[in-house]
Length: 436
Image (cartoon, rainbow, N blue to C red; front, side):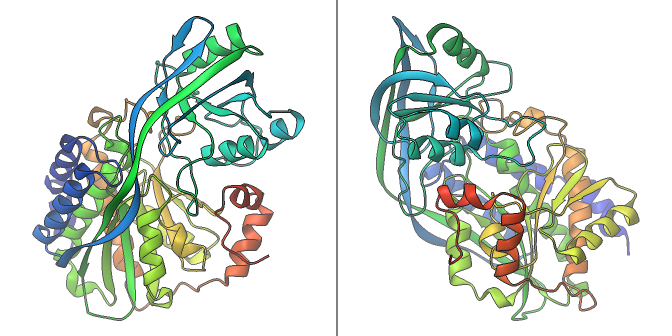
C-alpha cells in the first residue's frame, strides 16, 4: 500500500527530467528549444507509464530578443528587453513611480515620459500587481516607454512579457533593469530625458502542448498540468522546469496506483505560458470544461519545502489539500483568493475547480524567477520527491468517486475578483473575460 511512497522518495525520474530540461538551453515560446523540451516531456511521460503521449501544435506570436539599452546622459545603462516589447526606441523624461500602484499612476502625469516601476508591491498593499498591469497603466497614461526595476539585489534585471491576447506585441518599448541600475537611474537622471531602445525580431511561430493519460477512459478527467517553456535568459529551473519534472514524477507514481483511479488523469504540459497563457488558453477553448473534474496546476513547486495551494474559493479543494498535509505530517498552506496568473486560470475563470500549486520560498515576489539566476542549483531533489508524493496522493483523492468538488458559476468567480480588487487590473490588460 505504501511501497509507492518509498519508490517515489528514491526515484531519479523527475530530477533527471529537470536536468534534461535545463540543459536544453533556450525554451522561449515558439523556439526550437521549447519544441525539444515538449518532445522530451512527451517521451518522459510515456516512459513513466502514461498512455497516448503526444504533442498538439498551435500558432503563437514569435519574438526573439536583440540588444536593448537605456541611454542616460552620456552613459548606456544595462537592461534587457521584456518579451513582446516592440522593436522600437523612445525618448522622454524619466519618472520613477516607485511601486507603480494604481494610485501612483492616477496622481502622476506620465504622458510622453519614460516610466520606471518596481517589480514588487509594498507589504501594506492588499494584493499583487502584475507586471503587465503596471505596463498598461503606463500605456493608458501615454507613456513613451516602460522600465521594470527589480526589487531583488544582485545585479539581476528581470524579464517577463507584455502584450495582450488581442495584440501580442506591446504598445511601447519595455525593458527590465536590476535594482542597482534602477536606483542609479532614479538618483542621477529622474526628470531628465533618457532613451529606451529595444531590438527584437517579431515573426509567426508555433508552440505545442504535451498530452498523456492514466487511469480509466472516463469522459471526466482530473487535469495535472505544468508548462515547459521558460524565459530565454536562464535555465528556467524553478519556472517552470521543476513543475514539469514534478508531473513526470507524479505520472510514474500514479502509474503504480492506476487501479485506484476512478477518473482519468490527463497530464498537460503547456507551451507558451510565459507569453500570456497561450497553450492553456488553446486547450481550454477546445476542451469541454464540464468534463474537467478539477485541475492541479504545478507552476512554482519545489522552490521551497512548504507547498502552497491557491484554491480560488473552492472549500472542498482547501479541505483536500489540508487533509493530505495532515495525513503525511507535511506543511501545506492554502490560499482561498483568486490567482489569475498561471495555466489553471483559463479553466477556473469559468468555474472549474482548480489549484495553482506553488511553494513558499521566504522571498518577496518571484525572487530569482524571471532572472539570470533561475538555475538548477537553487533546487533540492528532496523537495521534488516529497512534493511529488503529496501531489500524487492528492490527485488520487481528486480522482476518487467519493470526492466531489462543486463547480462555481462564472458570475461567482467574477464577483470574487471584484471583491478582491483584481478586476480593474485584469480589465486594463485585456484579461477580463466576462460580459459587463
